[in-house]
Amino acid sequence: MLRMASASLFALCGLVGTPVPQAKADAVADFYRARTVTVVVSSSAAGGYDTLARVIARHIGRHMPGNPVFIVRNMPGAGGITATNFLYNNAERDGSVIGLVQNNTPFEPLFGTKEARYDPVKFNWLGSPSSETAMVLIWHTVSVSSVADLKTHEVTVGVSGANSTPAFFTRLLNAMLGTKMKPINGYPGQNDVLLAMERRELDGRPSAFFSSVRTTRPGWLREKTARAILQYGRQKLAELDDVPFAPDLVASDDDRLVMQAAFAPLALGRPFLVPPGVPANAWSRCARRSR
Image 1 (cartoon, helix red, strand yellow):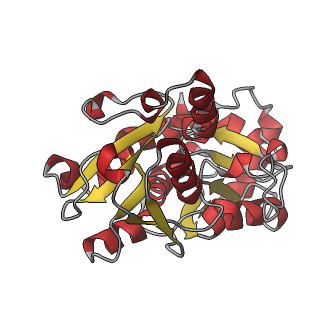
Image 2 (image 1 turned 30 degrees about the vertical axis):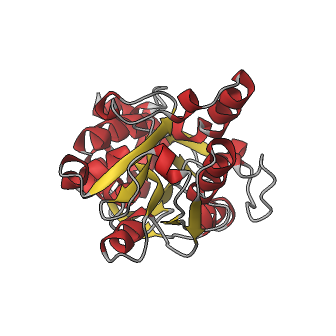
């Protein structure tokens, strides 16, 4: 996670590299001096997105003109759409608010999700630290240890909303691989699902990010507290070499293309953005100071 945070910092501070005239730079510094910048996170506290945002918030201020203080505000709901709607329609557009949103959110208007009241093209996308690989993660006491078992045993998996990424992937994998995962709605974020697994309220998580589990539950995979039954994303992860890769399990090229399209959001990793209309001057100066 620290490596991801460092990458995020340079992504945020390095995307806009055009030199800024001194007069404009001074104005930006004056604006940010003694100001608080809010990082809106589209998931609940203690998960991977939240942890990353809080690490970034501790350090990025010293790379900004005026050295503002950064704070984190969690705004979970509707699979990230609640926060993304806020950032597009209600957040200040003066550079005092940035967002860290779930990677499904840029695609929701394209999918026709009526709750997504924003145009993703109009956001200022700052960067992302990585691509993500997701896992179907099952608690160790559940009698499922393979994809074949997932096809014959129904398991309950936690999701954050009907339109959320975990719910979508649950439906996709059930339809294309014949698995029997039953989504249980209402969990704000990944950490809430992992806690529910520990309490035995749930059997598993249909889209646990490898990077988050390794950071927030470092012993789970190593000690087999939970089993990675399946992995999926842009490409197979070397650290999960013995875990089947979903696109390898379908027979036809058409089905493989469907999976590649469905997994495209994972390639965005954990994207940072600022609302439409925010001037790029602050980030330009940030780029110069972070080199």
